[in-house]
Image (cartoon, rainbow, N blue to C red; front, side, top):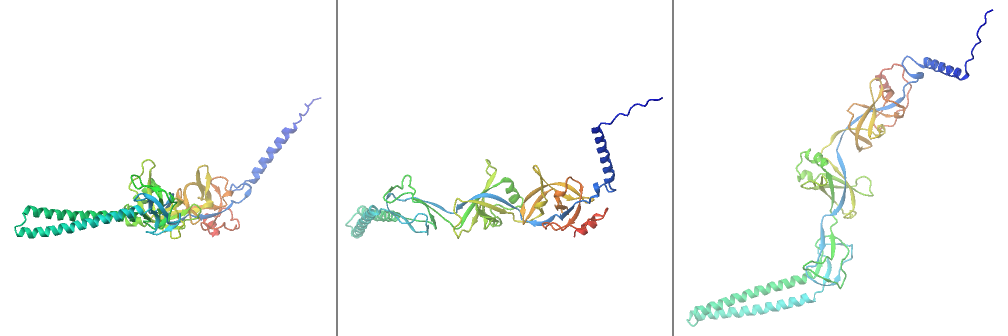
Amino acid sequence: MTCKPPLTPVPLAKFYMLLLAGSLLLLTACGDDKDGQAGGFPPPAVSVAEVVVRDVTPWEEFTGRIEAKEVVHIHPRVGGVIQDISYREGEVVKDGDLLFVIDQKPFRAELNRAEAELARARAQAELAKADRKRAKNLVKRKLLSPGEYDQRVAAENQANANVRSAEATVQLARLNLDYTEIRSPIDGRTGRALVTKGNLVASDPTPDQLTTVLSLDPVYVVFDSDELTYLRYFINEQQTVGSEEEAKRPVYVALGNEEGFPHQGYLDFVDNQVAPQTGTIRLRAVLDNKDMLLIPGLFARVKLLATKPVSTLLIDEQAILTDQDRKYVYILGEGNTAQRRDITIGRSVEGLRIVSGGLKPGDKIIVHGIQKIFFPNAPVMPQMIGMGDPPASPGPAPGAGQPETSQTEAGH
C-alpha cells in the first residue's frame, strides 16, 4: 500500500496576492489597443491657436514725480517791517499781483531827501553855468586870465556831475520804495506765508524767505531711466539727444489712483550724463495742466513709447504655465502631441501677452484644455481657434489614425 503525502494548504494572504496579480495581468492584456491607448480612450480635445504676429510700439514704464516748471522763492529786496499780507495762502495769483507790503514811511522819507539833494545840485549847476558864461566874456575882453576861466569850466562840470549823482540817488530811493511792494513774478499758486504782519524782515546779508510761488500749467514729470532702456530707446534708434524728433516723443502719465495713462505729454529733456552711482539717466516730460489736477510733488507712473513699431509675437495669457521661475507653453507638435516650450514673456498688449523668446511665427499654442495634459508629448485632439477666442465647442472624436490635417480642418 502506497502512502501519499498530505496536501499542504496555501495561506489565505498568499492566495489573494496571486489572485490580484492575475487580475492585473488580465486587465493589461485586455486594455491595450493597437494604438497603445490605455482602455481605448481617445486623446483629449484641446483648443489650439496660432501665434499672433503684430506690429507693436515698444514702451517702458517708470515712476516719477510731478514738478513745477517755475519755482520762485519770494524774498524781500529791502529790509523793514511787514505792514500787510495782500494775498490768501494757497490761492492762484497772476504775474504782478501784490503779495506783501513793507512799511514805506522810511523809504518815502529817503526819497524826499534824495529829491531835495537833486534840487540843490541842479541849482548849483545853474550857478556854475552862469559863472562860466560870464568868465568867457571877461576872457575875451582880457579882464580874466585863462587859468581862472578854466576853474569856472571845471566848477560847471563838477556841478553837472553832482546833478547826475543826485538823479541816481533819487532813482535808487524810488526803486527801494517800489521794492516795499512785493509782487508775484509769475502766474502760479502761492504757498504758506512764512512771516506774519508786524515782523521785521531783512534783505541782507541773508534775505528772509516770505513764501513760494509755483507755476501750474504746464508742469514737468521727472523720472529716471535705467542705462539699458536708454541704450535701447535712444542709441539703437540712432536719435540725436536734443533733436526735435526726440523733443516730441510721446509720454503718457497716470497718478497713483488712476487706471491706465490718461494724461499725455511729450519728452523735452534728456540729461547729458548717466549717474555712475545708480546707472540711471534723468528724463523730463511736459504735461498740460489746465484743470490744475497735477500738483508738484505727486507720485506718477510714466509710460515712454519708442518712435517705431516692432514686429512682435503675442499669445493668450491662459496658455502660459509656470514652473518655479520659468514660463512655458505647450505647442502642437508632430503627430498632434503637446510639446513643452520654455518662453520669455513681456507685458500685456490688448489682452494678449508679448513673447520675446522661445516661440516663432507659425507656432500653434494649446490655449484651452491644458489641464488635460499630464505630461509632455501627450497625444491631443486639436481644435483650431483664433488667439484670444473662447474654447472651441467639443466635436465628435475623430477616428483612429486620422491625419493631423483632418483634425485641423475639423477644428475650423
